[in-house]
Image (tube, rainbow, N blue to C red; front, top):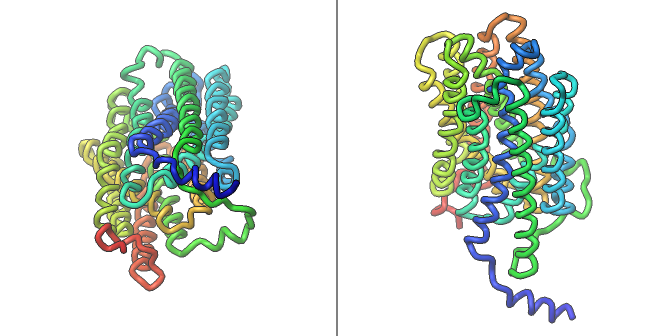
Length: 425
C-alpha cells in the first residue's frame, strides 16, 4: 500500500509558478491588513492628544505594548508553526489581530482598554508575520527567495502607506478618534479572509500537487536556541537595532513633523509614508540584486550607515524632510529585503519557524523598550532632540553588527551570505 501511495504521489504534477505567486499575493494581503493596523496610531497621535489628553508616554504605551506579549509569544508561535503547520496557526494568529482591533476601536476612549486591544493585536500580529514568513521560506527557494520576500514586503507596506495617508483619503473620519480605528477593523477582516483563502489553496496543493515534504520538529528543547550560528545572532542584533531605530521613530514622526516642522497632518503623513513608497519600489529590486551578487552583509552595513545622520538632520536643520526620509527609505528597503531571506539561507528548514520566532522575540524587546523610552524622553526633555540622538546611536550599532556579520561570513565559518547566483555551486 505504501508503494502504491508513493507511486500516486510521484505522478502528481508540480504546482505551477503562478499558483505559488498567487499564494504569495494572498498571504501578503494578510500582512497588508496587519501593517495597516500597526501604523494606524501615528497619524492619530495628535488627535488622541487633543481629544483624549494623551501624553507622548501614553502614545508610546499604545504602540509599545503591542510588542510586550511578543517578547514571549513569537518564539512559542514559531515552535507551534514548526510543529502544527502554517495553516491552522496563521489562522488563529490572524483572528487574534481582528479581536484586538475590535477592542481598541470600541474602547470608549479609555487608555486601559485601548492598550488591552493593542496588546491582543500584538499577541497575534507578530506570530502571524512569523507564520507568513515561514510560508514564503517553504514555498520559494533559491534565486526566487529574496524577490518573493521583497514582493511580500511591498504589498505589506502598502498597508502602512494607506494608514499613514488616511488623514488625506479618509479625512472626514479624523473629526473623532474612533473613526480611523474603525478602518483597522476592516483591515483585520481583510487579513482573516486572505488567510482563509491561503489555507484552502495550501490544502488543495497538498492533495493535488507533488509538494515538497517539510521536515517537522519532533520535540523542542530550549538548548536548541543556542545551536544557531554566529551569523544568525549577528543578524538578530542588527534586526533589533534597525527596527528600534525605525518603528519607534514612526510612532512620533507625524506629531514631530507637525510640532517642529510646522506641516499639516496630511502633509506629515504623506512625508512619513515616503518610507513605504521607497520600500514598495526598491525592496524587490534589492532582493533581486542580493540574489545575483550576494554580498548581503555588506548591503546591510550600507543600509545601517544611511540611518546615522538622518535623525540629526531632522532635529537640527531645516533641510527638506524629503531628503532624510529618502535616505531612511533606502535603508528601510535595503535591510529587510536582505535580512529576512538571509535567515532562511543559514537556518535548517525544520527550525525555520523557531528561528524567525526567536528573531522576532528579540526584535520586540527592542520595539517595546524604545517606544516606552522615546515617549518618556520626549516628555522628560519637553521636545524631540534627545530621542533623535538615541535613534542615531542605534544606526551606529547597526553598522557595527553588520560589519561583524561580514567579517564572520568572509571567514571559514561563513554560510554563503556573500555568495551570488554565479558563485553558488
